[in-house]
Image (cartoon, rainbow, N blue to C red):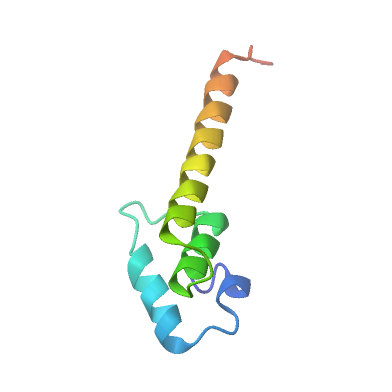
Length: 79
């Protein structure tokens, strides 16, 4: 994940970088988390946002993502 999003990890102390990488873990299917999730986790670990703000951002992204998925299922196919 550090290679995928070097701009998010730039300038971080090694211990912060390690904590973020450990917290992200690995996905069973090998997929990467989205950059916004990684950025928010870095912000949280560095103490720049509260835990409540971290959760709020993640929940908002999930709602927006779920809404986009629902809308795409309702749209007629162009094929």
